[in-house]
Length: 85
Image (cartoon, rainbow, N blue to C red; front, top):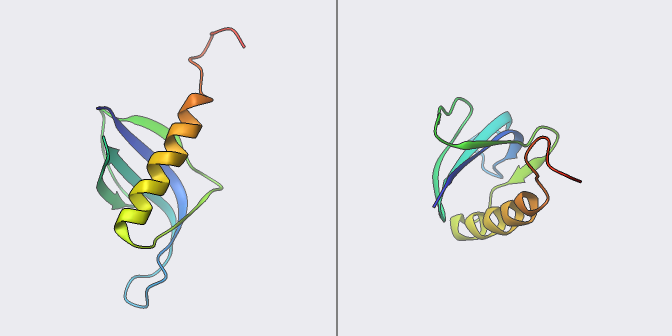
């Protein structure tokens, strides 16, 4: 499975122990959330710009399922540069 880095989202944690963040990255490796943070480096991952979008943390399984479903919908709409419309 491929690795996808969702970069630049606003992250809302809903936790007093962990503040919200303006530019969050989430590295998804197959069906696993491999990393969450503001400075994730993953040169082998496909990068998807999530600027202007909000990611809301809930239970980890919920987040994983939401990201997989959202990512699948998003990726279906992405075409390589230069491909016909």
